[in-house]
Every structure is written in C-alpha cells, then in structure tokens.
Length: 189
Image 1: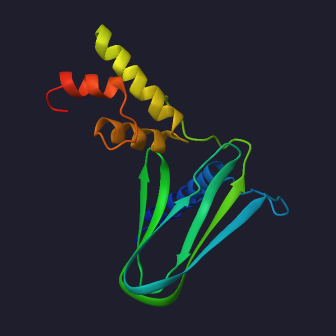
Image 2: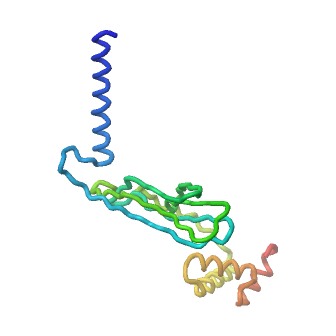
C-alpha cells in the first residue's frame, strides 16, 4: 500500500471521528470540555404483582420527549417476558407478555432524562372538528334530551359514552318521551 493511500485512510478516519463527536455534542448535548456538567434524571419504575397461573400482559405508559427534557437511555429487566414498545397518538407504552406465570412477579423499567433548554415536546396538531350534522326539528329535540340526561349521569368522557349507548340501546333506567319518540321513528333502533 502506498503512502498516499495510508494518508487518505487516516484522513477519512479523522473526519469520521470529528463528525461523530460533533453529532454527539449537537444531538445529545454531550459536553466538549472536561468539567462541564449536564443534569440527568434517572427515573425508575418497578411493577410488582401476583400472577395466577396463566398468561400475563402488562402495559406501562412511558415518558417521551417533553419541554425541557430529552430521553437519553431506557432499560428494562424482566426475566422470561416478551417486551414490545408501542407508540400511538396517546404516547408510548411498554408491553410485557408471558404465556404462563405464577406467584410474585416484578418488572423493572428505568429511563435517563437530560434536562435541556432546547428540548421541545413533539408538535401536536389539534384534530379537525368534523362538520356538525344538522338534525330536523323532532330529532334535534330528542337527541338533545338524551345527550343532556347521559351527560348528567356521567363523570367523564368514557362514562358519558357508556351512558349514552345504554340509553340508545334501551338499557338505561330512564324512559323519556325522547326515547320513545326515537324508538318509534328510527327503524333500526
């Protein structure tokens, strides 16, 4: 091998090393000089439960990038369990599964979060409002009554939906004129 080729390889390795160092400094805020410090929070969670001789599925909501903090590393410890990370519009979760488990079980999760002034939470766009469906006069009154009564008997969105479905299916306690009117005019109801 010639000297020129040797110097080219050494130069490429130096450029790659410098590029890696710059990337780590910019992306992960690793300090350039000795003595510089960054605040890192270590957050640990342990899930302990008693399995009852059967399949087990455990879901844990995980932290994500948010204003002022950035996730550096994540670790789990769960002997014999399958582990999957899932992300959807509500956030990230870790899901542990096993076909057969008995007795006391413990699952561990830890994350290192860097305190960072530049960290921003992921951009969240508000959902578009669907166009409202205009109701004709008798349907409008009946629907409004059902909605108001279900709303009064609910504590949150999930219980509101449950109460509204129960009323529409005729399982609710209230038999209002709106219920009988909608029952009569809607053939599938």
